[in-house]
Length: 139
View 1 (spheres, rainbow, N blue to C red):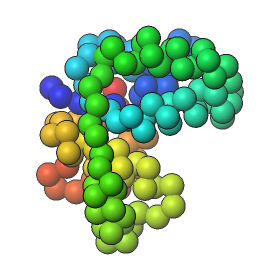
View 2: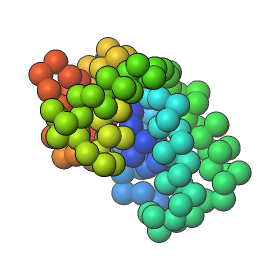
View 3: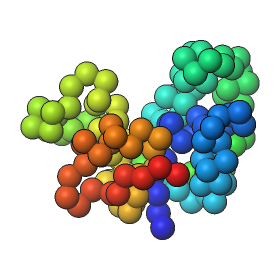
């Protein structure tokens, strides 16, 4: 099944001490799933920001992403037109503030034609999901 992996899955797949590491690592290692280049930036920000109780050096974080994530994913390119269309639909969908980042993952998953979006933030994504969108599931 084709899947889209959001940054929460990518982050957990890189941190062996994370409670969701095994499931996220297994999905990532299966390969052939989709994400966006922006998800790589979110992953880097989370790894280096310290919000999860661990702060990875920037050079090491970049290397982790390059070696462990890049070989396992394909990329959906979200165009400027896709972003503006999503922003124009935001009010109708109740998307405000930081929820736009989750919504853009859903837009990318829809554009990639995947059947399932994997995230550790299921609740946040299910609020945004509409008929015809990919299923939202934890790994």
